Length: 122
Image (cartoon, rainbow, N blue to C red; front, top):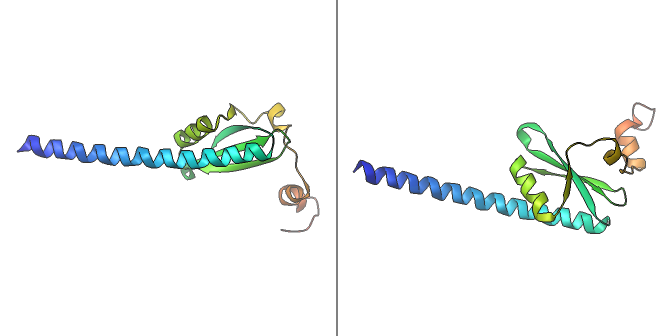
């Protein structure tokens, strides 16, 4: 009897793990689609993955035209899978050369530094 219960427990755990893998695949596919749409709008894109604690992992995107955006994946593994599915070139760091590609506009300046520089509050 003990063997039957152990086998049933193992099968249940495998079903749960399989369901979790399928959910991660669906999430990664959805993120990959969004990455692809961003890349299409901006003439291509590169990215960087950044841990943001328990919330997940941020996928920072920088378009060939300097446009930028980000997405949040629930885990680092899902973010990596999404980037892979989208064919996104990843950078280890958001360093000077990569960061210098980002083009900001008035909205970003008012959000990031406007208050400190005497701009209007958002």
